[in-house]
Image 1: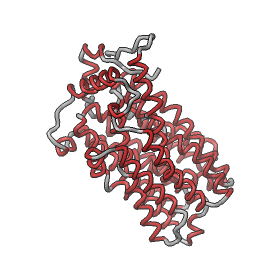
Image 2: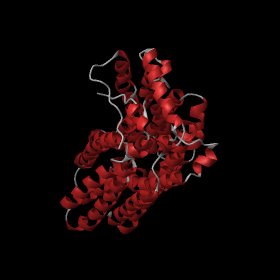
Image 3: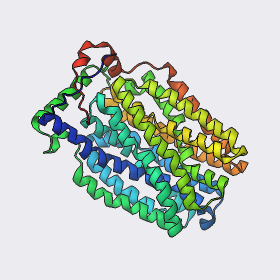
Image 4: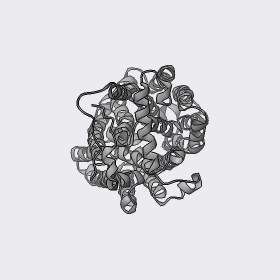
Length: 445
């Protein structure tokens, strides 16, 4: 296996400039995605804190409210990324921050079910293109040898947000109520929009803290990667690629499992333990701490080996097996079932970095962003069915076991789908081209 050359220990001004990307770009990207995830995942705490009772709606309608976000999230993904390419990811993400913060805050204000349903749908629309847009920004700033770690530091916004949100939202609801918690957490996204606009630029050539030599070296490395990727005439050719279809199917079933888990975990824990909402929040946070640690471990070794698929499918299947373990043990005591939930959560999140590094490594940048949006939209559709399906099973069976069995099957299937795909173009290049030894990895160290 060819390995990328690491920089010399004696740093140069060029390398110092390039290391600044890790502390200037990634924190802003991380916070933005964290706030997006906060304003979609806190719904589970509203449901656990008595949203249905406050609004005088049925459990079925609560399930629908949770799922409608993903329907809105599904619809405008590819058109949104086309707008990002035509205009500016930075500007459009700013507008999305303001919009989704307002819609999230309105969740705590609206008292009419159908208005609240429309609000949750529009919240999904406002957030829909942000994740693929953030990934496009990272492809402008980081090379292939860095991309799994860069993606993982973005995706850490997912479990890290649920980690602190699980604890903070529980205490915030206890101190005020669930409506006030939604208003406060939505307002934070609006305020952050101004900071995002001030701190972030779309490409290195737009900032003064990257010198000309560093910019030339980075752009040369990114252009060199493009030379070894297959040419795609248009989006139709890219969308019909066998590996792209596999990734779409994989991400549908993966998201079905993970979003069903995230939104209904607080409800499951509270029903199983009968604890106060703040203690429920603390118990809900532990699985995401394990997820953060495993994500960092997996992304590090994926980048070192330049292997992606091998760090995705086995871990997803293990997540499904762990959820099945919780299904079979929940009725015999919470302790062992809780351990299975911790293993499942960490394995659900761990493959995100390698997974999203696959796409720009097998497709040219002319179609990679739209392809990421297509795959992410399939994930949003899976999230819709996951949240709604798990909620329905919980409503009609009176317990969480059937929903966990559904999520278990989905995760195992998502891993199995990737068993037959081919290595990506950039990975084949790294494995077979001796010149790959000379590529520079701009390390964060």
